[in-house]
Length: 596
Image (cartoon, rainbow, N blue to C red; front, side, top):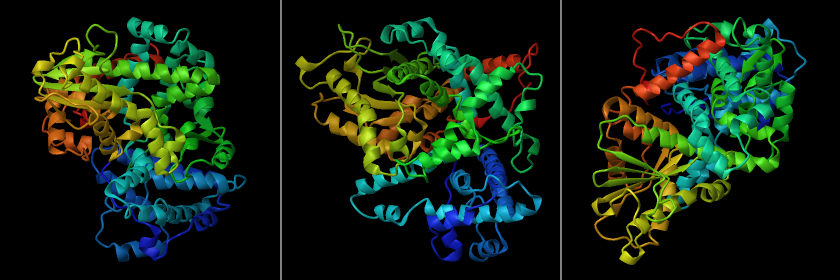
C-alpha cells in the first residue's frame, strides 16, 4: 500500500489527546454494536486496500468521513484541508480501527443490546476515537527519538516505530499465500525426500500427524475450512458497493450443502474465534508489549463471537494469515513445551525446501543455474543454503524461516528488537560472509572450493538473505543487516579480482514476485539484484519499489505458479461442492497482483 499522511485529532483541534481521554470517550459504549461497526469499517477498508487502484480507497474514506465524523469534526476537515484528497489524507486505517476495537473490547459494556437509535452516536464516537488514536500511534518521546543521536540511531528508531504499522498496512495477499500453502503443506510435506530429511534430522516428528492429533482434524481439512471462511468475507465484493450479507458468519447456516462437516467447522471455529469476554481477558493480561502495536489477541482468534449466530471478522487478513503462519502457531499451542523447539526447527526445514522448490524448478530461458545446499569440496559442510550462477556473478543465499518473538515485534523498544534480530538472524549474515571468505580467500592455503562452482570465473558475489517473517518487509531492515554482514566480511581477506556486493534481504513475498516475472517473461533477476547493490550501496531502497522500475517485472504471472493455484482451487471446489469441478475463466484478466 502506498503510504499517505493520515489525519490526526491534533490536526483538527490543535491539542494532542491522551490515552486516558480516549479510554474515557469509549468507556461504557455498547460493546456489541461498536464491535459490529468497527468490523464492518475494517472490512471495507481492507477490501479497498487489496484493490490495485486507489480510487475506491479514496471513496471508502469519503464514505467513512461522512458516516463517522460528527458535524464539528467534519467542518474542521473541510476548513483546514479543503484541497486534500481522501486517499492521500485518510483517517480510517486498520491500525487505528483495530486499536479502537481493542479498547472497545476492554471498556465497552457487553450487557447493552444494540439499538438503532444509538447507531449515529456510536459511529461518531468511533470516528473521533480513530482521530485520537492516529495521534497516539507516535508518542512525543518517539518523535523526539527520530531527531537525536547518530544517523544510524535514527534509522534504527524509525525501523522499530514503523514495524507494526507497516506489517498491518502491507498484509500478505491471497494470491501469494495460497500457492505457498499448496506447495508447502500439500506437496512438500508429502514429498518423500522432504519427509526423509525431516525424519532424519528430527526423528519421530511428523508435522501432519502431530497437527491432526493436537487440533482434531487433518491439516488439509483445517486449511480448506479456514480459507473458505476467508473467501466468504470476500463475497462482500466491491468496497464501495458491498453486499452486507457477507459481513458476518452464522455458523448454523455457513456450511450449506458443502462438504464441510459440522465437526470440522466447530474445530476450526474453536481455534480462530473468541468471545468478547475471552478477548478482554487476554488483552488485560498483556503486559510486556506496547498495546498500540500488539494486536496478537485479535490475530490469534480473528473471528469475534458477538452472538452464537454472529461471528464478525476483526480483520480478514488475520484470517488469511492462518493459512500460513497460523498453521505453525495453531500446532504450537497444542504441543507440549518440550516439542515446540522441534516444531520451529521443522518449520525452518520446510521453508528452506520451499525456497529450493522455487529456484530449483524455475522455468526460464535465462543462462542461470541453481545449486541447492552446495558443499565445500570433499566435505559435508554446506557453503550456503543455495547458490545461483549466471556468467561471472554468484548469488550466495541463506534462508531463515524463523519469526521475531511477540516482545521483539511489538515492544516498541529498539534495544529489545535489535537484541533478538541479532541473535536470531544476524547469524545468516555471518554465515554468508564466512562462506564467501572461505571460497575467495586471499591466502590460497585457506581457500575452500565449492562443489559445482568455478570460483576462477566469478567476478562479483551478490549475497542474499531470504526471510519468511512478513514483518521484515519493513523499510530499513536491509540496511541494518547489511551493516552486520559488512562488519563480519571486514574480518576476512579476499583475493583480488572479485567484488562482494552489499547484502540483499529478500522477503519471501518479494522472492515469489520475482519468480513470477522470471518464469513469465525471463526477467533477468540476477542483473536486477546485482544492479541494485551497485546503485544503492547502503541498500536503503524498498525492494518491491526498485524491482517495479523494470518494465519486465510484475506484468505477467508465472504459468507454473498459476497452475499450482488452479490445482488448489480444484481441490477446494471438490471439497466444498462434491461432484463439481472448478472451471477457470475462459479468458481471465491479467492480475498484476499475482505477479507482484
